[in-house]
Length: 383
Image 1: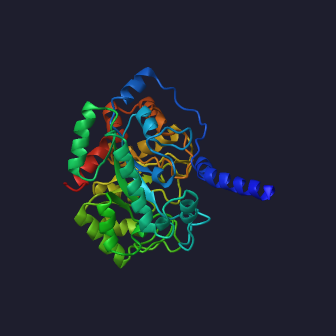
Image 2 (image 1 turned 60 degrees about the vertical axis):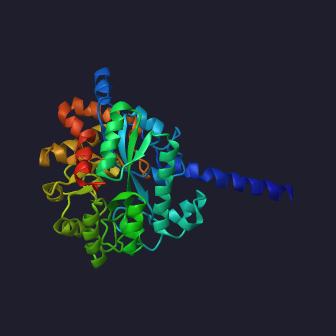
Image 3 (image 1 turned 45 degrees about the vertical axis):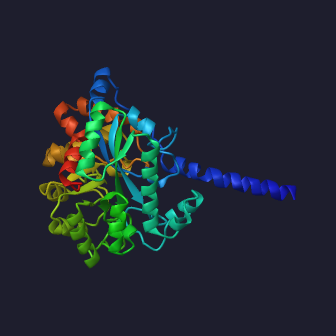
């Protein structure tokens, strides 16, 4: 009996510790050499409005308001890195055996994660409920932050946030996004449910083909379905920002033809510096930015073919030289089950390397957040 009790207690302890263990394993830092951070570089970084298009923090069991020694993001570390505005995505499904080339939609690892993290039972079998829960979490953090975290849902919200931030530097803005429109579960009425929950950016795909269209990593990699075409029109109508990260080549082309609004690719690499499966070709970059779109450069190895800040800046400069500085931004993919050279406290190193590479301060202001700010001011719903 004593042996059974010890085993039972051990299993309980393991179950309680497992979420943190998985989080640590999935979101590590690699120890690449960083540029020397000068006093002048740090001082300049602290003057910037720093924004990022993609972060998967809401997937995990950490408290955004507390500081952690693992993972990539939390509010205290965001302040240290001078982060000003973050797009937080809702990841609702990832296939078993995930890879960049071909994935089926028949399996899902987020179900297991939802269970071991003791998320509400409704989230165990519903992709929509997972996104609604992620929204609930972020709104709870906003309420508990005592005004230091503000969720942005409109141009009006964004302008109010900017006014408050001029007076109080500690305030950080947040915007909700879904990573893959499978969160809609194929039901048009769920667009309204996610909109009412505060989501203002929809990624069309993640790692598998869905009801909307093909993924760059799916089995068929097809174009938009009829449901997908209708969704594009509805997103335009509601001023929901379209995110083409992970989308198939056909979905990218067809969306650019159909959409009346500019799009983003929230987190990606570019084939000009890294010939990855999901990275954008020169023609895609030109087509996206010709319509006023924005390219978020990722910080993880498969996006930039390296794991250093130098590799990140190399991709940023490539887009700058190809289509102009106004179309490039940060799309870190922090806490997205990726290895990165820095966590959010390391953002000053990107600023430093941009300075080291001879990028002007005015252009750095745009890259580090100004472009995202301008895009949101132009494309969010009015109020």
